[in-house]
Length: 116
Image 1: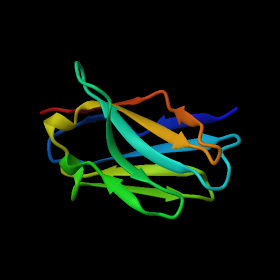
Image 2: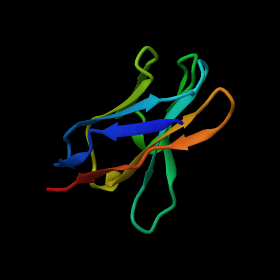
Image 3: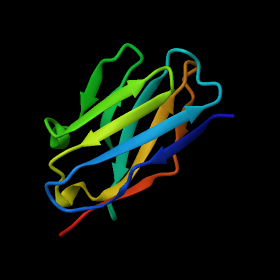
Image 4: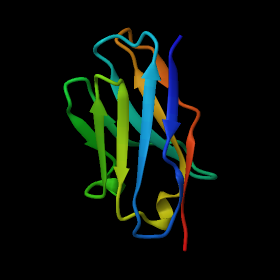
């Protein structure tokens, strides 16, 4: 059984930084993709950033230059470094893993609130 454990959310002032982590355990294989999504109240869930097994990354236009996704394959962990946070970044952030067998797994979500 695959489990995703997220951490690092919280309350931060505009312009501040947060780092999210998502650790995966279980049978996800050796070639899996990882990503972060977010969902703000009243809005659809959207892709924030993703990183494939080879290391290539993809970002939403709204976070380019501010957020950085990275992964530690030895720890099956994906990180999202968020800098220069804006009020509009406020959302629940979800980790997603796509296993080698193309099964999708989601984390429980972590709240990020950007407010003065």
